[in-house]
Image 1 (cartoon, rainbow, N blue to C red):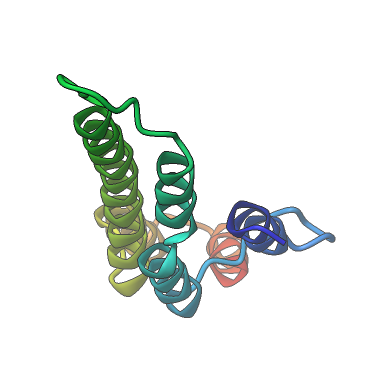
Image 2 (cartoon, rainbow, N blue to C red):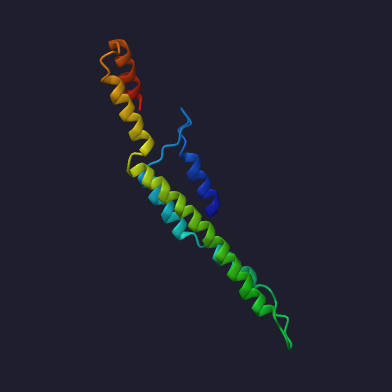
Length: 134
């Protein structure tokens, strides 16, 4: 299996077949970061492909320079993609590690509503039931 196939399988395994909601956790994110770090097959493939190109030979041969530039572009593009993935995983990690501002605000509103003396007991129980789901 190639690295890309493995990555797709990892993403597919995130989803629980019963409710189709992703099960994200810090361990998953750290594993994905490690996968990004260990992805080097593209470098090996690029080097192999470039090395199989026959030299043009003769004066003014610019094939070597073109190979080096092509390899540089491949590495730069892939590293830019990896940096974006790492930023995404960093954001996901931060979101999992600490409660979001929106969640904290929602809990504050719920607390104020539950402490409202004008609210009926049934309404308070309904709010508590919803909170227990999350």
